[in-house]
Length: 177
Image 1 (cartoon, rainbow, N blue to C red):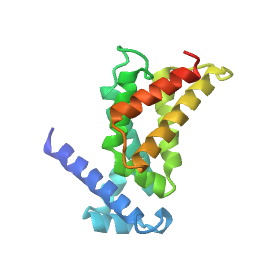
Image 2 (cartoon, rainbow, N blue to C red):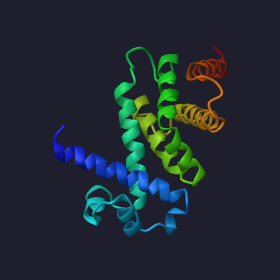
Image 3 (cartoon, rainbow, N blue to C red):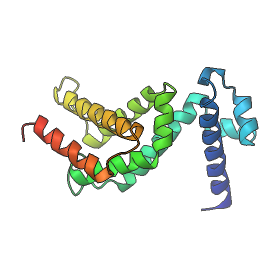
C-alpha cells in the first residue's frame, strides 16, 4: 500500500477512535467536529475529505466492518446461515466487540441494525417487495444481532463455537428441522 493510502487509513482510524472516546464522555450531539479533529490531531480538511458528518463516521465504520466480513464469508460452503458462516459472524462480532458495544451503549445501535439488515439483503439476494420470505430474513438477522450483542455484553461466557452451534441448532428447531 502506498504511503498516502496508509496515511489516510491512519487519519480515518484516529478520527473514529477519537469519536468513540468522546462518545464515552458525552452524547454525539454535544461533540463538535472541531473537537474531534483537535483531539485526533488531524486537519479539519482531512475529516471532510473522508466524512460528511459525525454520523457518517459511524456508518462508514460499520460498512467497513461488513465489507471486511464479506471478504471472509464463504457462501460456496453453504448459505450464510450454515454453522461455518454463523461462526464467522460471531468471530467477526467478537473482533469488533468494543465498537459494537459502544454503539449499543450510546444509543446508536439503530445505525448498526440498518447496515446489518442491508448487508443481509444483499447477501441473501433480492426478494419481491410483497414476499413473505423477507420476514424470515429479518427474523434471522434480529435473532442473530440480539444473540451477538447479548453474548458480547455478557462477557462472552461461551466460546464463539458454542454460541454459533447453539444459534444454528435453535434456528433449525424454529424452522421445524
